[in-house]
Length: 87
Image (tube, rainbow, N blue to C red):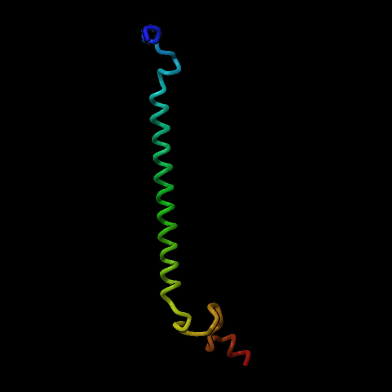
């Protein structure tokens, strides 16, 4: 145990290496970057969950018999000038 105390006392007496002088700023910058990355990941995850729930809710909540018309979505209306000229 006395050897360990001697080694620790010798390490305490030595000056701090130059590479450790500015390590605080690098560590805090890395932590801020990690925090920002986690916040953006959390936001994207929340948006995906909300979109999935809305999709499931509208998919389960509407029945196929509830559709208003059988016309195609981008079809021409019956009174369109082009359909009147064809007849």
